Structure formats: structure tokens, C-alpha cells
Image (cartoon, rainbow, N blue to C red; front, side, top):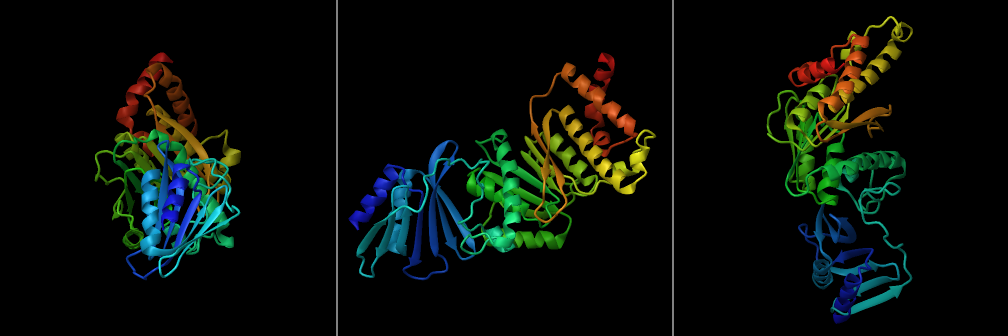
Length: 400
């Protein structure tokens, strides 16, 4: 057994372990894991090893420093499992423990490439990787119980990873030293709330509290059951209306995916009033501007219903983006494809920055007002923020 302890200690000391897989339980127990996978990850610039323990339908995660990881792995073989595969760039070590406790270590050629990038904000590789089962992806039928992505589900798997990349890009704008409050308005059952939670809590190790809000009681009940089954104890689902929600005084991130028509605007207003650091919004149907927009110049376009609908949707998002900028947000409009929707959509990603000066806001305000007047629009979000926008528009008029 000493040879095993020595090997584990050396692999940890030299930071050589790429992946460790512990399997073949000594005694079946529904409360104990049937498999444990260990991988190196980077959290806040430091090397950790993530232990993924597969207990029934749940996957439990612990992130340990190298020294703690070595101490944790040894008892896995002495007490829980009969075999392990420790993979490094130099060799694979197959470890077998007999019923009498005899240790056998077989060294073979390596099957894993060296880990050159531990950060989870990667562009060329998937952030959520194949090979380690993720509970909600297994539930969706995207992965099997072993973590293999099903051939017919690769498009959805890529879409989920694209969403995670969009989240990863804004993590540096979130506080790292306290609990983060995140609200998902109109969460529905698209499972992207679970993606958000898994990435920020399980992968990045952030201290978060996530609340999913929706009007449909059956949807909330189903999502609550899944969160409980997955062991996501910092994820809560509530029945409620976006405009009426006042459950938190401070929110760090607001997410609204496919909230219908002005419900998106209600969520954006909430985010602005909370001074949320990050806003992720994918608007759904957008009827308000469709009913309002008028222009003789644009009549060749507006006389066709389908073109007017698409134009109104784009103009609505342009208005939302500009109003967010006037409220001190740096805003991007990105292409987004929901895993349950085939049409292409727009994601509004806004990050709270330093409030611009009056001189900087003046040209933005004049540009916005001119655009809105040209369309003869009276947008919900502007009306909701009238008190905040009035001095900005007044200053822009004076300077203009």
C-alpha cells in the first residue's frame, strides 16, 4: 500500500495528474459514490483538483488544493474502490486492489494529452467537456450516464457551450469575495438556468444564490424537483411576475431568456434599478413597436407584415441597448441560438461600467431620441425610466 501512497504523492507534487478515475466499489451503498473522477482545474488563478463523485443521479463536486487532493485519493482505494486509472502525460497507471488488500500497479503508455490550459474560459475547446456526466444534460438526454454526448445531440451540446462562453466572458465583472445574487426572470423549463448554476457554482466555484422566476406553477414545480434531485441547494424556483418581484434588495446578475414582449423591458428595468453588474437578455416576441412604428420613408418595408415584424424586433433591441448605455452599461448584441429554438435570436449582454459624464451622454441621448422619433415609437423601457432619463435628455438638449 505504501507504493500507492508514494505514487499519489509524487503525481501531486509534480502536478502531473491529468485525470484520475476511481471505480469498482468494494461494497454497494446508495449513499456512497459508485465512481469518482479527479481533474485539475484553475480557480481564481490557483491550481485545484476537482473531485466529481457520482452518487445515484447526483454528481457532487469538491475542489481541493493539491496537498489535500493527495490525502483524499489514498482512502478512495483503501476504503471504497478496488481499481483506479491515473492518467498523466508520461504514462497511465492502472491500479488494482485485491480482496486481501494487495496492490498492483501496471504502468502503460499515456492515453491523455498534457493539460496546457486549465482556465474554463476557453474559445476553441468546450467549457463543459464531454466525458464527465452533468446531471441536467443526462436528464435532457444530451449525455448518457457515462458523460458521452449522444450523436444526435451534438448541436444542442454546442449551443449550451456557446451560452456558457457568453457567461464566462462576464465572470470577471462579478464580485469574487461575497455571495452573488442571480435572478432568472421567466426561467421556463429550457434548462439554461441549470447551465448557469452548474458553470458558476460547480465549475467556477463562485458563492452564488440563483432564483428562477416564472408564472407557470407546473414549470416551477418541475424545476424545483430537478434542483432537489441534482443537489443544487443554492438554486431556488419561485412562482412570480417579473414586474412585481421584490424579493431581493441587491442583485448582481439578471438573466431573462425569451420573456415575452414588454416582460423583457420589465426585467431590464429591474436590473437597472438594482444596478446589477451583468445583464443577459434574449427577447422573445416583440409586439409593442410593431403596433407603433410608422414611417413614410420605410413604407416599402413596413407594408409587408413579416418584414415589419423583423424590423420592429431589431429596432426594439436597438432601443433597449441604447437605453442601457444611457444608464451606464457597456452593451453588446450577440447572436444566440437557444437549444429549444431553431430561429436565430439576439442576446443583449450588458456590463455595468462607470457612469458616463454629461458630455459623453449628450451625443448618445440625441442619437437615441432622433431614432425613436423617426420611428414614432413610445417604448416601455423609456417610460419606465422616465425620471432617470429626464435630466440626461435635458442636458443633451442644452448642449445640442
